[in-house]
Image 1 (tube, helix red, strand yellow):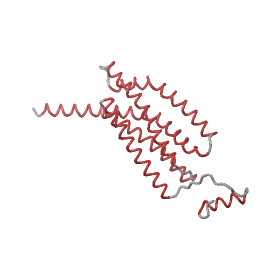
Image 2 (image 1 turned 180 degrees about the horizontal axis):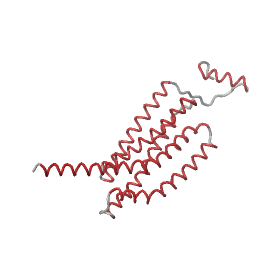
Image 3 (image 1 turned 90 degrees about the vertical axis):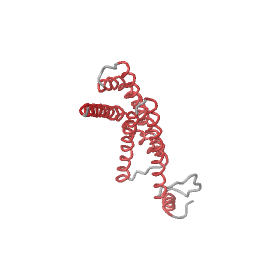
Image 4 (image 1 turned 60 degrees about the vertical axis):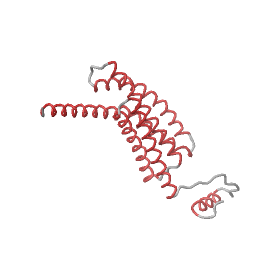
Amino acid sequence: MPTSGKLAELATALQERFSRITCVTQESSIGPTISQELTGQALVLILLGSLGIMGWITLRFGDFRMGATAIGALIHDVIVVVGTFAVLGTFFGVQIDGLFVTAMLTVIGFSVHDTIVVFDRIRENRIRHAGEPFEAIVNHSILQTIGRSINTSLTVVLTLTALLLFGGEAIRVFVLALLLGILSGTYSSIFNAAPILVDWHNWAGRRRQQQLSAAKATR
């Protein structure tokens, strides 16, 4: 039995309300030190995971822009989840725990997986439709994969919603973080990563054309 601090106050209140506590199987608390440790751990793991993912996508597709835009979509998802929990913590006292780090890494994996599906179809369509503008190829690729992305995410969302409503309190933060991340990841893979890739590709094309024009003008 705890003899000091908030845990002792809680134990005393429980005994006064119910009956004497004879056995304590587990007790845990989250203080400033642990919170800082969790924050640091989450940031390091997310950074390492992001660098590894960007490197793998760049090697897999042979295009650094695809790796960078995938990380951009991933950062969007992380901001959505962390920002939501910051608001919940400020106004509703929601606290994160060690499972939150696990949830964030899972969200990263799911988000990147969805983005890779779209990028892989873009790579295939660039070979099949070599003469088409890049934005048209990306648009075709999104239309071909959007049904699969939504259906896959929907099955996961339904399962997580059931866990959020009927699961225990111990996994509620974990499930909520996953739910928010998967919803955000589905959106960002389709509507963030691919459009950013198109804009970057068009900007690089215009810049290359300007450099060629400048080189011809100096001759």
